Image (cartoon, rainbow, N blue to C red):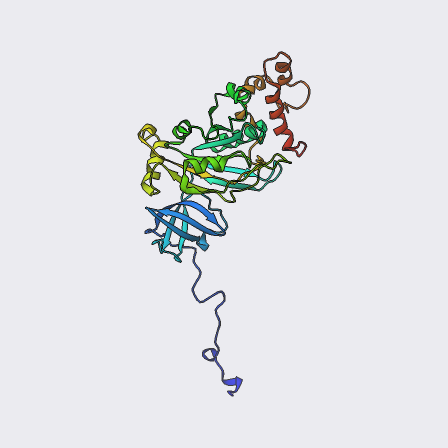
Length: 351
């Protein structure tokens, strides 16, 4: 054992803290990364379409805790062969053209991104079994306009009930709509979906997954039934998934859809599209939407609201909405839905 009086710095081993590699703020640019389209997310693994291959990837550590969702365009490095057991890395998320969000309820500050880069929101509503929910439709319309998506109302089960009462509610909005029925012709719906990336949303049991299976037979989405006691459907789809129809799944078909959205290509020249099927929901929180922006989904009320006094809450006396209601110039159910949304943001209304 050496005498401590004769030990110098060369005799002492210094252990580096946090690893031996010096820390740097410079991140790799990954200039050779390839772009992919996220078609599915499952427990931290992302299924991406790269060219005509389906590649499974994980998120690179440098991306932090930011979310990656179906519809995202991402940059990938690593093994992009798509062979079983291989794993690539997502190193960058490209800028999104649209983001569809929702919150757990109207007072929850945490917003959840559902889908990115879509251009149409298909709101699926059953005309019966379960009964239609206009207030749910109103919420979806608010979310669609906030995300910059064009809404399409898809009314299912017209063999059980006529569409006229629900269509009448939304006729003043100029909202596009299509009606389907069991074993019916889906050509009109197909034409509305062609040339677009469409997100399907709706309560459980309205026939959303059934429609998806008819449009994309190889999808094989699980189909449930409506509970005879509660009148509600069971959750069958557990995660969002992007599915192509009318064309093989490849990057070229996606590029043509993006070109059509940007106006560089006429949609009439396309014969394909993409559907993003989402899990059935029973509530659509809108805490991320400012109260003043709710009126965007209620253009039939806009003229009356313009006559309201400055800082009118639209909930108390003196509101112009009440004057227009008394004169029979507005639908009472539309005013009630608008006010219900305002109240729910304070936690005072049942959703």
